[in-house]
Length: 300
Ligand SMILES: [Zn+2]
Image 1 (tube, rainbow, N blue to C red):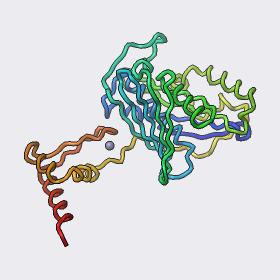
Image 2: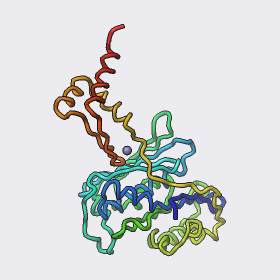
Image 3: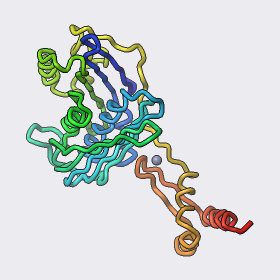
Image 4: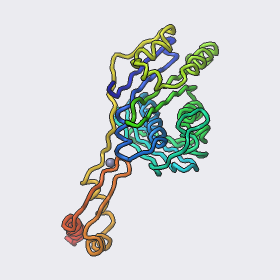
């Protein structure tokens, strides 16, 4: 099934639910960054979380940056997701591999370690909203739910999953279920939701059983006045980097540094952290930048 996201409400607008399938974009990230199994799971879960979190932003062009910084061997994880359904991201140490945890699952918590989750919501103007929480388990789903519950004061359940085998990622995605202020005092409702989400035992088994997002939400909230929004949003891995931007960044280094690159390296190479694209600037490109700088600084 294509990567996609659907939004829904239930309980007369007291519950907000979002489901996302991110199998292909997670596989693309795995290939681009040559991710290990555990790094695929860690980045895949964080990308799904970013897309789920971006899904309630109102303004076009809004983005969420999710940074997980733990003291484990994986190093940091950085994800940039948009309300437009695009996402990109990387991990600091993509080749780190760990033995499975005691449940026989990929040990994302062990790879991430103890640390912090940083979230920045940027609507495209004014100051972005940013907040930080301590990591609960490093398994990402718990950590994002904790963030949403404390920093954004919205009690939330987050279920994230990535299944990666010898042939790559075959199932990935997640669910976000939030209790909005009008239902926040309804403890029976919250309890029912909690027990149902806990009973799911993960997200990828549902995809592997052939369930669609609509079916998953119906199973979960079908008897609670579920209303699924008609629009299905497509999701994809996308990075806005370009050769022009790389040249712009090189130009900012200044004439002396550029001259140095021409003499010592006969050009310059830059790799985009987010998508792994390698850009090569030739001696001629660098000479042109120096030329531009000289023209810009020439008097009158
Ligand atoms: Zn890029």
